Image 1 (cartoon, one colour):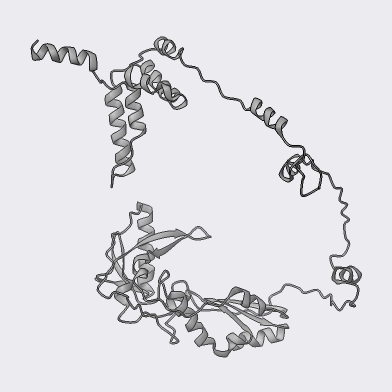
Image 2 (image 1 turned 90 degrees about the horizontal axis):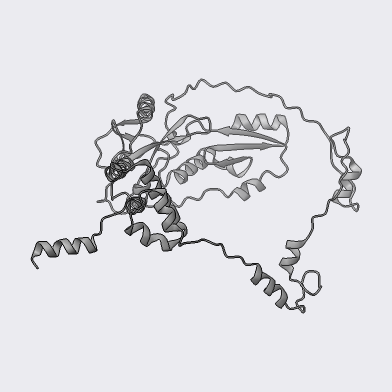
Length: 388
């Protein structure tokens, strides 16, 4: 026997040609390679299938797809899918006649379990025998409760009803008085959007690094053409407001656009990597529970919000280069405190406490850039508003 004769016999008996169904299984189990985009992965998968199925008919492709689906239901069909090339419906039906799929029922076992259930089981909820507490809740029938609602002519709660709700041992001291919602004072402002508000003199942010030799060098995130135009517009506004300036810093954090509640875009910098190398500022933020407790006894509340509050805090001259960020069109750095820095909330809260002084311990409730003035009446509220 020569080599050619042996090769012919070997290939005729052990030929491992991949079937159409096996090719589909291989494609379905493939995943993108490291660093491969979804577009490249989809293109590679489509090329593989088209090259494998270019000489097949529509019926052969459909038979392969159905066989792969049947293989997912019945694992015994894996050998058939990987070894036999089924070309039409007739051959598929003939091969599948040997397999059947029948769902197992638990009716017999359930009946046996109910028959073996001990009748001495006692429910710890109702005290009766023959069932457990969870079975009682599951078999409990819902009851309908009829509730009558009467239309009240006056929205105010009657003193007698209020007394019954609080307890009849104390007389009612509630005062029923209607408060009209109206404008008590108009405060005009000359500030325009993105106007240079100036910087506060009550604090500045300094970024102290744990490892001074460690820098941040990130590539900009990919943006769509529309997002790049929005980013350019935001950068122009920040440059005009003297909030940022062009940079050549060794630090480079990427930016991204985040949707606001009104649908507009907010320019945010991903400072996660430099934040991990920043010494934390431990100035505490107020507890919400303590702030709510201070509202007790007040009748009027005046709410104030600092315009672009974080941008009113200057950045220390040695820390400006550490705020640098990159966009697809350039590199910039902040002159005022940006959002996203690790110590930004603590620095801003300290600056607000210094600016308000003892007012934060009397009638001003302050949490970052939100302030609330509490008062007992309208006159006192206007006076305290002028003080703030």
